[in-house]
Image (cartoon, rainbow, N blue to C red):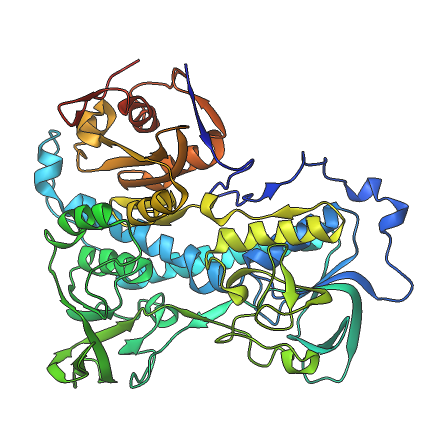
Length: 524
């Protein structure tokens, strides 16, 4: 049997975020009880490592540095957990979980098909909002506890670079020194010019996660991951949604084939419409129940006014900007690009585009702009520490997965089909594609969730996988199997049937079972 292989040595798991490709086999982690003498802090410095920022990236870097026997301090700036825990991944998943149950229990036709009678469902908005906040608070406390349990010092102040190897404690005038400094300040929501956010009727994801009210009619500016997830929440709770997208297509970050299927599953059956190729040039807040939000739109190309709409609320989901202002980069003569700190593949800071390495300074996560996902930040933090202690590592971002936790979910890793085709033409190999349908999976049929596909893109000459894209129930779980277990996967490897993990297996088999252009999925 031939083997399907991923092109690098190590791949990322969505939950574990250990995606970096080592140049040699990873050494075992050292515990504090086995701290090597060579790793003890130099008399020149207060710490071996200072980390500015305590989000998922900074937290992961701190734990890994401690495991290498380094003395670590983390400048939390009053924000342990960062965006992911407090204003992003964690509370949004709580809203999606609660609203998803409302959606499921409201789908009387789906329930009746399985012999279940439902007489409707009610929800308490404040209770759903509290669930999200309580989860964020719990995870934040757990992260803080995990650092304190290791003896890692948490500095409440915001860290500011004041000189090489030196960090100031906010505006206190106090300073601490370290042989190495890792910048992990994260990012903030990007608000386009002309949009006025009051975080009440016009809000970013920061305000949206508070769920202070459920608008009857809400516009979402941007149709990426954040916008799509919030459309899932709002429509489940009874809102009507209008997407305002500047690009010609919805969900521009998705593989086009997957995006079209997502539109059929996640958009068309729901009270959602959209405007494409337009900018929200001016957004004026309203007063709930009194005055509507006004949104003026212009053509993305001609810049001419095309429409004005009135809505109860407007969510701005137009991406994020690096939180690098007031970080003190100017004190080190470091030039950024649109606020992003430039780094090499080892996460060492460069003094500008194509610049020189700044000794002892590293940058991970959203602030370097390489891949703005929390688990990518964690992988970069681990990689930075590995390089710091002399074990060369780089993160292969094409092995870091992404997921959109709608109902059903969308997930992918690697190149989309257009990117893969472009690379195939440039490098001289032939692109292969296998598609497996959930409707051929008995577990999906048992759930009455047959809408979904899993698509694998690979080099036909070597069977090297270059991309995997999934839409369907548990897609975010399925993608991890590709990331974690597909280093060298034998085609005949057995998988429990009829579990959802079999979707992967049948797709792997599928490219060997093409009949008249259609894939035949089989049980082992």
